[in-house]
Image (cartoon, rainbow over all chains, first blue to last red; front, top):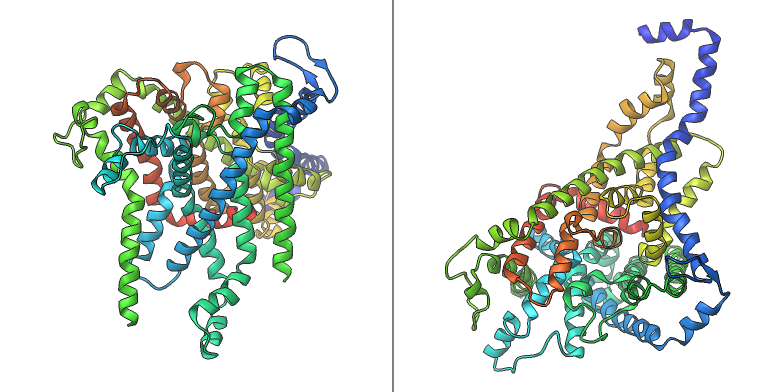
Length: 305
Length: 272
């Protein structure tokens, strides 16, 4: 109360400073964030673009060479080999993640004893860092003393060179990926499933539709926006993958599990070819941004129908 | 018939859940085994004699204490800064009309399109130019401004009536006081969600430390683990022990704040 009285008595100069403060305040509030974004995202993004047109090793002055880095990107087989491995990883891991997380979400959306417990169990691995996920599976799949080979032995199967054979190394990475990401997408699916009105299912049951039928003609179509979200998020995530492989296979055997981000990292930091690495980054960004745009378009379409 | 199906489903779920928990359980069990036990063939399920030797080695010889403290410092400081900076920006963008407000909002959100993986090379140059190379502040400051955080807080604050802020101004409260005494307490639910996520992001982070830190004294846990696992002679005992100690804080936070997790996942996940 006292404050109000005082404020009322204040001379007009005080009132104008109050207004002035109100006009400046938002800029001051936004400033720290804006500064950090500019310095650590906008500036690097512009520099990265500049580097991509230059010959630059980080020490000697930049020399602009036009599009030569880009022509080099398109003619470097190693880059496309790493990129192809990323695509392969995306094409195998994304459908697996989609099907598994949707299946678990469907089961855990029903009335069920211990539902909360089960949800937590499947969500747990998403909390663990990629480095520890990699380390964990490396310990399990270790060639000479891993428990997996022991269990296979019990079943009468010859031990497998999990991490030194290219095919099995890739398989190990897929297993670790699905294990560590399933819970994240399960939660998104559960939220999507909860948004579907129960009346639809009741009506379908009254019409004598089977459970499978309701799934294909009610659940899946109405889940389309969620599905698009899950597929796009997991595709982008898979393209960016690196820490998991760093711990699990180190990119090996040879370069068999060196995916695109790790390859760019090696060109930039180990070979010190900042120009070429930046051009490769721009190519990767265009692909990821393209996917994000498709996601936005599709989600809008899904929401309208 | 129906209850039989239910039972079958339940059994399948239990088997799946056990399979899912197995890797973590196996790491925990292994971390309490001594050297001969660890590399023994056939492997024993339980430690033949329970030992804390690996934990002791990790802390004494492995400098794990230093990495742990580095990670704690980075996680806590960065989370505090994130909450402060993001809520300030979110407040400004929700409750003030000013020149360029839409531009700033759109600008913030569009930075989501530029993943760190794509700009790590120029970021390295920026970090070294600013003298942040091999400094923990290089891990703390850049990730403290997140577009997701600003956006979530802004959306949340939109529902606070303007009259409330006007009344406070009539009472002579300054803009900072309004932010600190009214906005921050009201935004507590959304801030809690963000705090938990920031904690997890920073604790588990690998890419920022990889770009910014090369000095072993400044290693965070994740960076240390990733370097040790790449060595030719991996000391599995202390690595497993370190992993167990590293997993504990995140899992504990999850158990305590489980509700927030699911809620935050759904809202932030939907924003993509």
